[in-house]
Image (cartoon, rainbow over all chains, first blue to last red; front, side, top):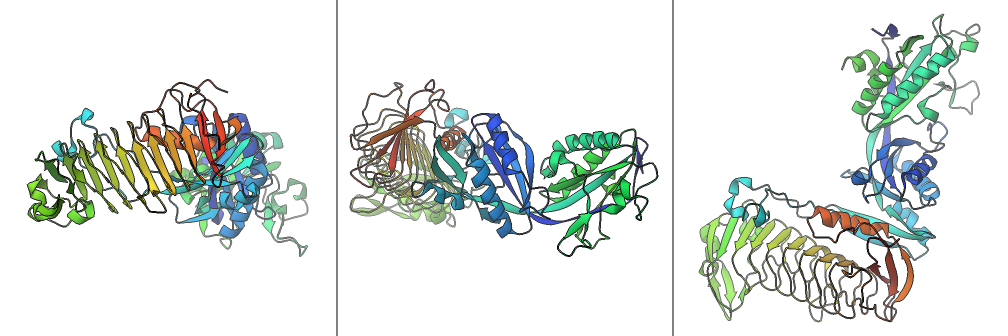
Length: 332
Length: 278
């Protein structure tokens, strides 16, 4: 397969399940929400050495945010619920609660499982914290049985408009109010978690480092438009692609010499002759479909003049159950 | 959908605990018409007071008419919906645990008294003791939402433990008296001594005259002027529920008072200073 003259190798990215959470941070000004978001997702590139993988998913407009203020949504990924709870609690506590004017909300409602975040951070209030239990009732529909007579009279006159019975109780959300020096830090008690997908990836092999980086930047820009995914590495781009294991026992991962152009003469290289540099895009998502969509968007955007090949990292199928075949992703 | 049309003009109280969606769901119109309601000092069949049409298999009951003497509608209900078109009497939704009641008209005393859960929306006015504790009881409302678009009487949320009450118009004396926890929003002019004896919880007051002339009780202490973020969640929900809100209510600052210091003192009164206050 070729796109714009760039070869798309018939291979697959090997992705694996991760536990995922979404946090929405709001602030009086977008600048402060973004500052908190960047701080809370710092040092969260890979679970090889970080407590979580995290990134800013998208900007949240005031009319779509929980409290009517501008914000950002963040995605966090970890290998277990316990580890994710510890990581998110620490990051929200140190990077969001400390940041001027912010509040932090759960961004995944209706999940079966959850982690406690605000409920852990409340103790910072030293006994002065308070909580609010909020019942999130749906409004009456305009054409439902409870409609206002001003809009057509009693519902009994419109039996065809009757809607099905509603749930007896509304979802309840608890919020903690922790006193801080500019007022209060508001944080939701529990954050929903889902089984996400980590380790989606593709490799951009180019004739020069400049071309490879330009293609990688375009790929990340395209992925930014896909909801439900993040690219957790700096600027979304990885230059230190890794393999599993090392000659040093204490290391779980080490440089992937087959893709290092400086080692072409001394190793079994995976680089075609014209390739001078490689960048990797790593994608984590809330579900497989989002990662596949991001892969397709990123690969298409990366196919610039000077890019030789698009490939993907895998371990022969032994690492993860999700195999994202590049040709299939692009064919959708 | 079951429709009950009020057809009498009695002034004698009619006690209608039987009118809950779950109690009527499995019955035919004939069976429903035979259900006994307490009329003064004797039971009378429901059909003496209502024309019955349809069925409640979908757990939706509609009441129509000027039903001022009709008490205890929806009391203790756990699910389903009741829609009232007209006036309804005392104890509407008292002790209810779930489901939804909407009144397109006025309601009497004790709306949602000691309710545990559910959603009551009265688009007209209500009388005294909305969401309150019955005399001798230790706790009032323990969960759920009560919205009164119009005015309400005395002792709103008396001894409430949890839940949310909003009053769109004026309210009587002693709103939130002896509150244990929960939230009350007052958008009109409250009567005297709101928050008296409150231990915890929040009373938010949105004075229509900007600063508000009614003084907070002296047993409350002014903490600061600030913008509580959590209140935005309630205000946005109220707007979503179709509740009438003052213009510019999402902007502006609030005076925060802690109290009541004659009780536990962990409660708060938030007094809105108007949309232009910074």
